[in-house]
Image 1: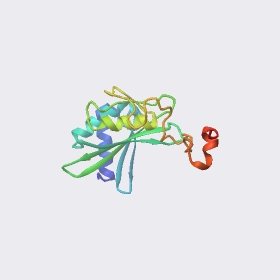
Image 2: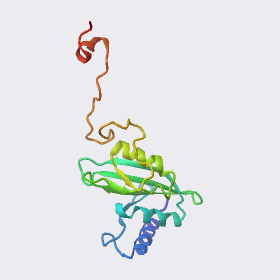
Image 3: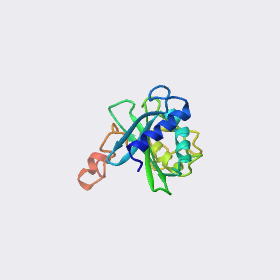
Image 4: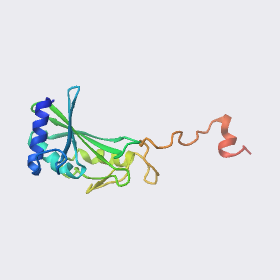
Length: 176
């Protein structure tokens, strides 16, 4: 893991590459978090491709995982988390971004990071985040005609009724 000082240096390098000196002034990096030995960059969603490309140049060449998160009831509600590894230094860095639930869209990184292909499809399927430019963005776990996104925190619990002998008359009518 990069330590807190190295994380700040990475953030400064990302800001310099984008031509801004501080967070919030057009900077791709909104925040840096170093908690329990984990280095995290919180970035602008529009700049995910550029940020990951610069991290790849720094040696973080392996996208280990890509996750979706629902921060309900807070806005921006939906998040995408990228875990990058530097295989030579055995280093890990987390990149987070958040998008609003009204228009949950972010640029796809699958063209540059092939491991993101199925992981972006899973985040799309389970959370509803649309990845612009994805080569095959469609459901991967749920049926194509399924309505809703099951891992969102406001998804109704309970699902479909299960047919047992004690409730058969309630779910499918009385037997003949």
